Length: 177
Ligand SMILES: [Zn+2]
Image (tube, rainbow, N blue to C red; front, side):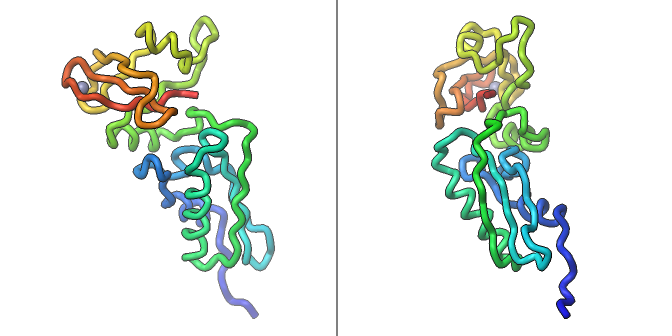
């Protein structure tokens, strides 16, 4: 008889909550919202299927993340881990948890504005809204709202480079999409 207690899905989720995003190492894949599902695929609990949606298709970090997931679960005794990539529906910054947004800010990256459409129906990702100053991105260092866009692209394509007019620190803004 196999006396090993059943491992719940919540336990699997808590293990995966310790897997960090390689580009933003303070935010877990759960808080980033790229982990879509995890489930046992057999009653004996030998194999797990993990479904992830990368932040954008072709993201080079995807394979790094998949390996981190396999490592994290296999280190806890899961024999087989399959990581499946699901591209639709596409990941959106709205899937990021509040905890993830707080961790981003603490790391010095301004978290994405809510993805809710504005009154005219456009989304905040609209670059013209960024450049025209319609979107206020508070400084993650001093919380000043007097910030300006320096470049549409920051350290990666998914971030924009801003500078704070109060503390003069440049910072990345995780663009909503
Ligand atoms: Zn500042």
